[in-house]
Amino acid sequence: MSFAIEAGETLALVGESGSGKSTLAKAAIGLVPISSGTIRLDGVDLAQRHRSVRALRSRMQMVFQDSGSALNPLQTIQRILETPLKIRGVPRPERLARIAEALEQVNLPTSILTRYPHALSGGQKQRVGIARVLLLKPEILVLDEPVSSLDISMQAQVLNLLADLQDRHRFAYLFISHDMRSVNFLSDRVAVLYLGRIVELADRAALQANPLHPYTRLLFESIPGQGRRHIELPSTEASGTETANTGCRFHKRCPLVTSLCREIEPNLHVTGHDHFVACHHAQTEQVASARVSRRAVNDLRAI
Image (cartoon, rainbow, N blue to C red; front, top):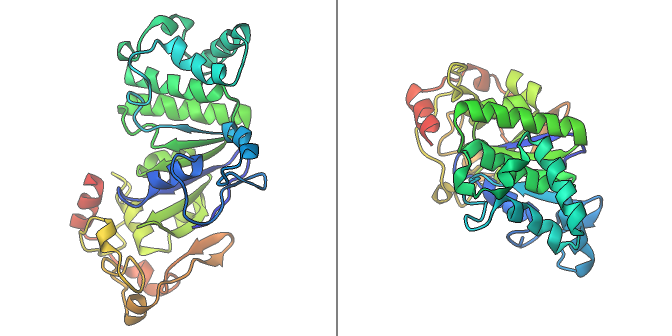
């Protein structure tokens, strides 16, 4: 897959569980090696293990899905926040000043510094995680389902916080989620991932108005209260075992499947203004007239 993110932009990566979203996040941040390709920041390949690119890595930070397990339970919040600055040789007076500033930006009082993670709510722990990445003054934040472990009210607060921080600092976000409501709120563009491959990439508004890939239409149908009933799909959960040896990797679930789909995997091609789709039949009338089975939608919501 190939994509780019500009400063101040949010690119959302969506798909079912097992589609490869978190793997991509870890690869982008350097937590797992890539077997081929490049990850470039301002033209510098971060996938290289040279010492010269190590300093650039702090410009890309990650907010993890599980805020609880992302914080060391044996350390106070102050020590958790001080550690990345101490590693980079920041003097103690400056460390304390930057920590106070970061906590203010995420709307947390400095009184939490003496507490341990177990004494904080889920929303507070996620805010601590966001404050920790702010300390390093990054340019790109990889958000790996940052609100999925929170209740609805906390989700809204954290999403609003992320939007405010982006407006203030011009962060670029790679926002990974399976929740289309969160995606619609935060994203500028959306890339739809299916079994490790981008099948559609477009501006969020354009994708909402005219999703071209059958799988994208199913994702929109899965939003509670906003379904449009466009596609009839088998209720098969996505998994790596579904990948066919040849052809489109979605053909076993697609209502538009033909012999061409079973034999040749479609390339991601442009169909309109910056609207890309990997489907042999994306521009046919069949896509608009197809229907969604209620069972398929319910199965997708449960994933």
